Image 1 (tube, rainbow, N blue to C red):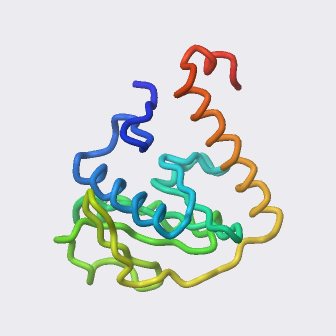
Image 2 (image 1 turned 90 degrees about the vertical axis):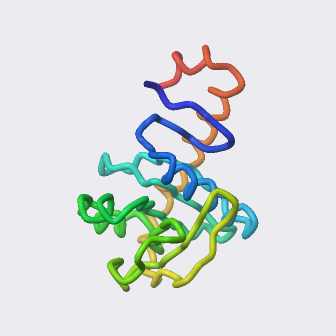
Image 3 (image 1 turned 120 degrees about the vertical axis):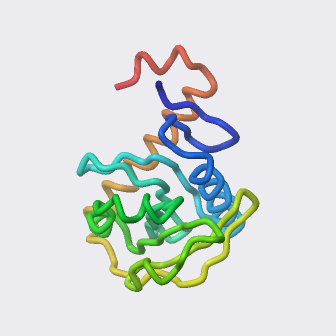
Length: 159
């Protein structure tokens, strides 16, 4: 299934309803704070960040969504995301047990209507070249997705 825009989010069919609810709440929260966000953002490593957001200063935040304890315990790739962000945050549903999440990452709790930051992620500034490459990839990805929404046929020409 190819990705599509649905309700402002980028959906590729792999997300559970619980994860989509958390995603929507985080996007609403970040939007209210002035952050620009993209979902399912492909990193240079080949991994995909659930949400990558940029603030007005160009700080890069990656959010790893965990919809259940099983989802958290079965996924060990999240430490790799630190190389691609200034801050790493987990976003979880309201009933998720917080004590199993690592303390060296931020924590958002969310539902479909919003999110609340319970713990800010420690900052570890990106190297300038990495920041530039990520910002360029962010801009190109956002522009290509917008073009795809406006004219789906156009996307077959974009590489």
